[in-house]
Length: 116
Length: 113
Image (cartoon, rainbow over all chains, first blue to last red; front, side, top):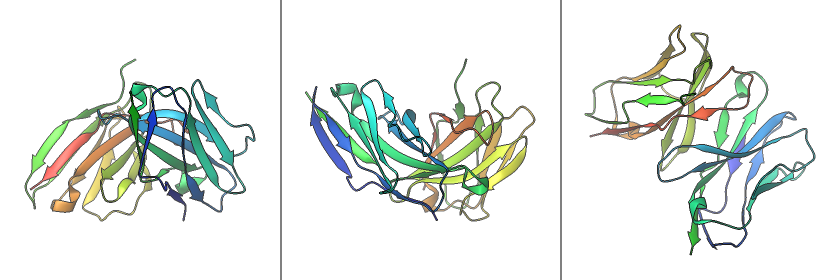
């Protein structure tokens, strides 16, 4: 079975600084997606960034980028120039691409605080 | 385009009762997935519906059930509520089961007393 592990329950960063959130996963599949979702206090789940496993190039979305290490099964999120609005729970998620594995499997999340 | 809507947003029920939650997907989306979020277990997949058929199911007891209507709206039902069913229930819609992109609703906060 696939699992997702986020080893940092809480993190903090100074405004305008850079922070990296860690995520590791376990799977025997070769075709899958990885995601980072953000859940602010409003509880609305928002997609931050996604990575297709077959792509070697790391995904980037404005201030958000990932370091995808497929062999190591590692998928970290880097937030540059942190803003107060980045404060939220961040969840790493895995989705297989075949049959019954097409469902999101989630890590337990990392609570990110941004200090002014 | 309107987002995913979930009703009600908040619900308080008593142990032993049953509850029905509703989710309306984004217009044109035909796939709806449900997730349970609790502080202890985190986010867990409940089930997915596409074209009125359950396509995938998580590891939840039979007290948890769902259905999807011809207009793609989905309901989930929990019978014989237990205290541990207190959670945020999230619904997500996508255009189909093979697509990776899911759009989440604001959730229904269920409290069982």
